[in-house]
Length: 265
Image (cartoon, rainbow, N blue to C red):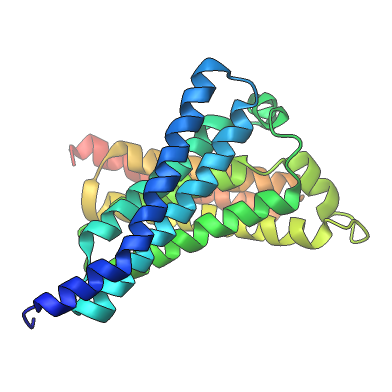
């Protein structure tokens, strides 16, 4: 790698200063909102969603700074990438605090949480989810294939899949899904497709992380929970054959886990 000249470094610092100032402004806003939430917890759920959106934006600003480093310094700015990753985790945590982080649960268990954000329309929820997913995609792409964070991204994507699912009011979405005349029909169809794809990807990702990296029981349990979440959608949409196939897949994974446990692997 060529040595970075002082001129290039100064150019980079000048270019990123406005972005750093923007991040500082948003983080100060975050601190202020959290402070007001401590004093007045009213509308806390809406405030957390606002904070989640802010953190998604912060993550994208850090990614822009990383891109500038590549352009001006011809090097990857790992500090910016790491800060982007942390911001995306914060975004997910804010959403988890509203709609829970439960991978698989009946609607009744988080219905009260959704009641706190009833004023947020389906289109807005889908927009937030897509923004978060796109930011995660760009982050993973920026790190590259040989990153040490490869297996950590399984959790990032898995937690994203869960909040994307739980952020969706399935009663509202399924009603629109079955009515092509509903104004929310297209959004409902695309949202459900996205969530089901994310869940399916998480099944495979946690299974692979168990096999090729961690060998941790909780990774296989998460894969099984995501399979169960898949089956819930099959039941909602009366997909009996798919539900049965997933049941068999879950049984195979359980047997595999039990066999490895008996062998002490």
